[in-house]
Length: 195
Figure 1 (cartoon, rainbow, N blue to C red):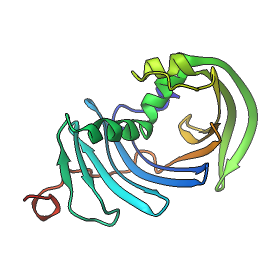
Figure 2: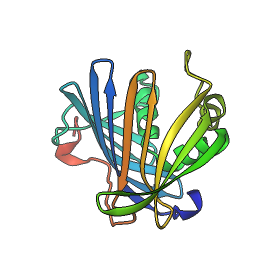
Figure 3: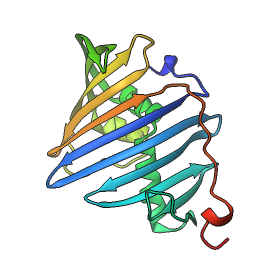
């Protein structure tokens, strides 16, 4: 998986999570650079939403998913750590590294198709503690010892979909538009609060 990911890859990622009376939808465009992942994402959860841009390790947040003014967050702002964590969850490359670190079992389920695209379906069993450590995160209390991911890869070994269930929350992450040109820029002028 990781070998198929070019150093300057781009991807569109869509995540849907539901359970415990909540539904969250996250859409992001991600561009990998030598210094890490940059992204432009929106999150909508139970009618509330926000937008986040990550560029050059700087965070810009807007309380509108439809293009309101952005505010740059200082790294010491408590919200910055939470937003960095959410942005990291959209970083497919870091997910691959975590899965690799905690990988206990891989099972080939077989060939499948998603939106007319042929894919190969695998079932991965990943040790939660090793995966969390690989991402630099503490193990969340109550986390099971292992998590099973259903992973679908394209013919070029790029991730097309990942599904998992954890603590009554079902999640589906779809990756499309691999390596198409994207522009992700820090907000400026009228789109930046305080300008």
